[in-house]
Image 1 (spheres, rainbow, N blue to C red):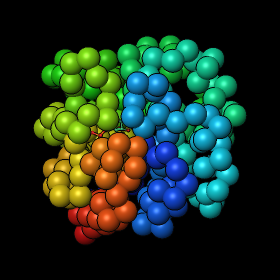
Image 2: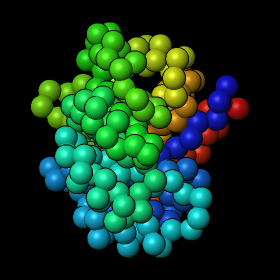
Image 3: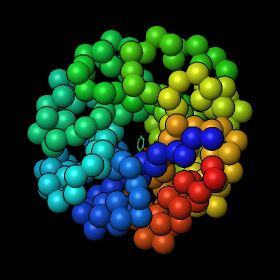
Image 4: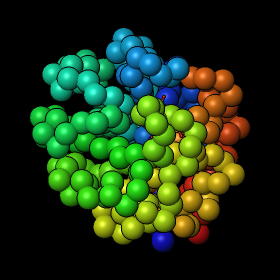
Length: 208
Ligand SMILES: O=C(O)c1ccccc1N[C@@H]1O[C@H](COP(=O)(O)O)[C@@H](O)[C@H]1O
C-alpha cells in the first residue's frame, strides 16, 4: 500500500507552516478564497513561503477566480501547484499550464465521476458536497466512490478528515494523498500543533 503524501491546508502563518513541515507534511495549502475564514493575501503567502526550508510543496487554493489572476498570484507568491476548488472548466485548468493543477470535485453522487476524465490535470481532489459551500466544511465525502476514483488516477482525499479517522480513510480509499483543513485547527485559521502532528503520523503509519 502507498504511504500517502499529506497536505496541510489553510495555513495562515509561518509558525503553523514550520510546525507542519517538522511533523512531515509534504505540502502546505494557502486559501485565496475571500469568503473563507482561512483566506490569506498574496503578500502574506509570499512572506510565509520565503521562510520555508527547501523541498516543501506549496499549493494555492482558488475558487472560481479568473485564470489570469490565478497565474499572476501564483507567480508573485512562488506557488508550486494550483488547486481549483470551485466550478472551474477543463479549459480553465488548461489555461494555467505549465503549472501543475489539482482539480477539486465535490462528490454529490456517482454522476460526479463522469466529468473527471475531461480535465487535463495532475490529479483530482475529492471533497464532500455541501449545498452552497465550496470546501473547508469538515464534512466527509463518500469513501466508496472515492476508492473507485483512487484506483484510476492520483487522488487526494479530503473532506472531514481528522487525526481520529485519517488512518481508516487511508486504508479504505488508498489515496495518493490526504488533505485536511478544519480537522487540525484549534480556531478558524489557526492550527492545533498536536492535531497536526497526530494527523500526519496517523496518515503515514496507516499503510505500514
Ligand atoms: O479551507 C477552506 O477554507 C476552503 C475554502 C473553500 C474551498 C476549499 C477549502 N478548503 C479545502 O476543502 C477541503 C476539505 O476541508 P476540511 O478538511 O473538510 O476542512 C480541503 O481540500 C481543503 O483544502
